[in-house]
Amino acid sequence: TVVHGVIPDSGCQACHAPHYSAQPNLLTMEPEKLCQSCHDSQTSGFKQAHGGYPVDQAACTTCHDPHSAENANLLKSSLHSPVAAAECDACHNAAADKEPFGLNSAAGQLCQNCHDNEAIQGGGAVQHAPFKAGECLSCHDPHVSEHKSLLAGAGNNLCFNCHENTSKSVRFPHAPLTSENGCLSCHSPHSATKKGLLNQTEGDLCYTCHADVRTAAAKN
Image (cartoon, rainbow, N blue to C red; front, side, top):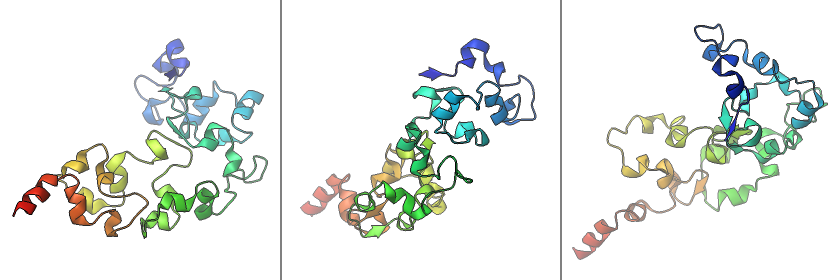
């Protein structure tokens, strides 16, 4: 684990006020100014690490964890490969462009420049609406995430951002819903062969877990 160097050296009060603050999380000053009070954005090393992009205008915690991380440079756990390689121009305009953080392709096409849409779709005729519309950022973060596959939220909570009616009807949840796979126990995230993003007919899908019910039914 990589720990932010200021923590063992100076403790929590290097960044946080102990009693009150005008800033969120009791920070001693505005977040970006706080980071730059130690990390000089004008040094060649800083610029090289960020591909020459003016990241001093952005929020550092978009990509970095301010306390500790498993990755070098306190980068969050799930990294988009261009971010890890400081290849921002894979998606953005050149660093010297007047709009360096503008996208170099239309949003719906950008992801497909690297990611094979047909391979991701997997041959399913029924497509998840955001996937069909090319709205990858409905579910994924383009830079970094604390969740696998650059997901923008954890497990079922990500699905419930849109599927609110489902989230409100879980007084007695189906066991797979509360399992590690959650909604993905039955549904596919991008596409599937059956309506409802199911890859089997309802009966066959249920029997993958409830085989004893099928056996009992056959005896009757």
